[in-house]
Image 1: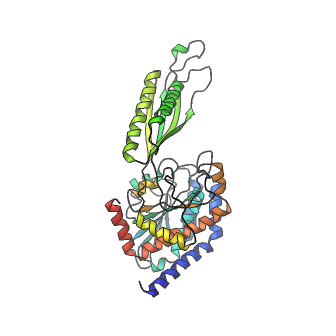
Image 2: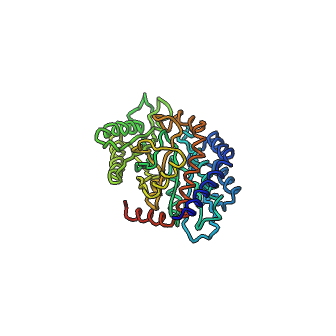
Image 3: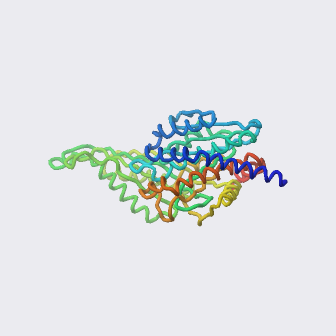
Length: 397
């Protein structure tokens, strides 16, 4: 690469950063507005509308809703040198946790994704290919990205980039495979005092399932998880509950072990139903896969991270689960994390929710948008990087 080419790229990356900083107030207002109006999975109507509005104002062609999901977004902007080039995906999430709000900081991810897209728009005239923004609903439950994958909305994307807030900064994320599991036990009502023998206690079945899970944990590997809550356990203390409802999740870093865990969980439900004379129903949905980190993309992100004055912390072994893992099994993908708070602050907590609108989080919104956009710019302007990322992906490295 000639010095003139190096200078040109440095200048373009500076323009990207300047364009994002020029929109700082609007981006942070978007982050804070989404935070103040939390919406759970598949219900992110206001958040997705605000994101779509910002992209339209930035010159993107916006499809919202996209596919079958009311709150999905696909926005695009062709490069000024034509579309005969890579299609780089900039992703965003914006769903909240029921009862907790943005305890995972998705408000910062939405604003960061918008900022990255708008930063790239500032240099779009110099690019070949297409900038593609994908607003992906329901990461916390339901795997909205998998729905979008199934409907072809990721077709033709050459790389997927998405930042996540954390208590540490690292480029390579490890994700567990995960299922959402709904369990319903159905028994028979009866008076709990005068004729309890006429009932079949569905709550007892749920309690047995919880105890079976507790015993099962003794034999689980250290990289496996199973956890859940009871949503419904009866209506009155003097009525034998005829219905109980629970919601669970199983996770593992090993795809084979994960599938075995699914089978074992179904067996536990059947056993609890048989022991109590109830009927048991188990429904698996919203599967998230393990993460296939693309090192080629990760190295470019790390270089831009360093160029923006940020350093990596020791890598977190697991970042819970995410349907970003599903994307990583389809195309070259990275899901790096940037710290918005002190190490040891737990995700999915009130403290992390508060951190998601802190001054530090605001700075990370701008920094992550800049780094994601600059990494995408590297891919747009160096076809060999895209080819290398796909070669790594196809070799299964």
